[in-house]
Image 1 (tube, rainbow, N blue to C red):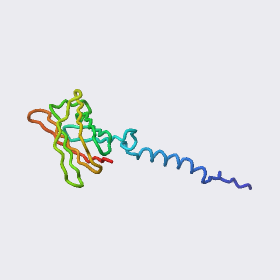
Image 2 (cartoon, rainbow, N blue to C red):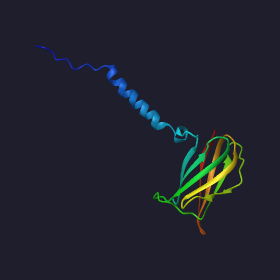
Image 3 (tube, rainbow, N blue to C red):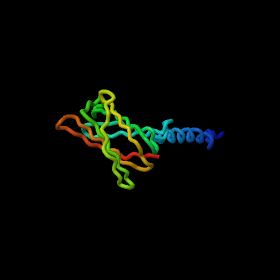
Length: 144
C-alpha cells in the first residue's frame, strides 16, 4: 500500500503574508500628525454637547495658526456665538492669555498665536453656544 503524503508547508509560504500584515499594521499605527507634509498637529475633542476638529499648523515651535471646526455629536456643523482658545505649557505651568477666535464660516474658526515653545501644551476651547450655554473642552498637544 502506498502512503499519501500531505502537501509540505514551508516557512516561505507564511513569510510573505506575515510581512504584508506587519507593513499594513505599521502604516495604520502611524499617527496622523506625523504623516502630514507640513508637520501640522491634529486632534479631535468632544463632550456630550460639542465636538471640535483642531489643527495646529505648523506643529513646531514658533508662530502657529489654530484652525477649529465645530460639530454636533451627530457630526453636523455646529454654529457657536464665540470661541476662545487657551494654551498652558504643561511642563512649566506657563499660561498664555486666552485668545478669541475669528469666525471663518458657519462652523469654522481660527486663531493666530505669536510664539509657542517646544513641548506638551494643554489646548482649551471655550465655546459659547448661547448666552446660557457654554462648553469647555481641552486636549494635550505636542509642539516639536
